[in-house]
Image (cartoon, rainbow, N blue to C red):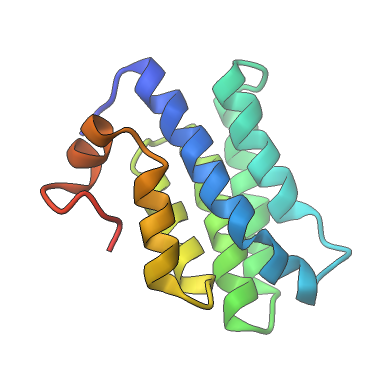
Length: 136
């Protein structure tokens, strides 16, 4: 699916929202590492038109590097979620990966998926995730 530019920006913001919910699990283990937070900020800045896609991709790569350096699985998943949120600027399909990793980092993945589904417009949710309309 290739969304129109408005939908692409909406997906980037939604991916950033998903990743931001996971961020505390990264920051609990790596409080001095701001790369995932910066990647979430990059996704939001790109969606507002304030950052070039190539800069958002750089932030995505940095967040993935932070994930590789993290010891705990929840922190790794949270950093990967942030990386995919920023990468949504390049390829809209990264939004689903941001959501998936955010759910993976959550204490209650089903509840997280429910939140994610409820924060995306139904028409877009159905086109992105198919008939079920969920990220699982």
